[in-house]
Amino acid sequence: MEVEFSTLHNEHSQHIDRWLNFAIASKTKQLILDFTCVQQPSEPYSFPFQLFDAANGSYLQYMKLASVSLNQTTNIKFLLNLSKLELVDVKITDEELGNLLSNCKVLEFLGISHCLMLTCLILPHSLNHLKHLHVSHCPLLQEIELNFGLITLDYEGLLIPLAQPSTLRNICIKLSDLFSALPYIFTKLPSALLRLEMLTLRCQEIEV
Image (tube, rainbow, N blue to C red):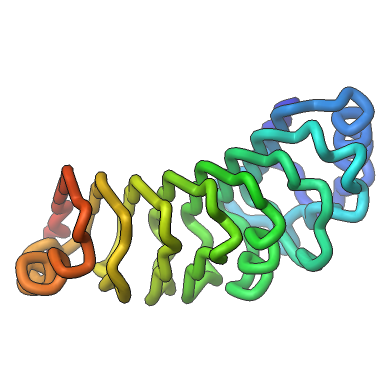
């Protein structure tokens, strides 16, 4: 099920909840809620995790949430078969994201963009199946802790050093200031990427 409305937010939660209940009853495998708008609402739609449980949410394999709020992410039981998750402009803290990911046992793809509250992204060791990570435009993000098994990293934003050796084979990095990052890229990055096969560097210089 796919719902895209730029004017919907938490004031319309009753209507959105009805759509979600319909999706649950239909045993949907794909759920997209996109409420992206130019002017952000005072209170984005709060995703109702309580509507799902291990039985009615077990069919869900792909979920994309845009311009929503995620909280109360503990004890989530319905993401057992979720293989792809995309979060765009989502209101979520580091702790809430960690709780959410710890329940995605078979996740293979994770995309995070424009999440303005995130400062640290730690991938739980329980994400044994995670192979692809895309991160972009999270301005407060200062640390990314990778788990073993990750193959592809697509990153756009300010330079964030990789803290430990990883199994990454393919990396695409787009930096706003590539030249200031060159010393790290040529001296320290190789020691953290022992299995690297392809490295793509892109620079988007800002003209003043």
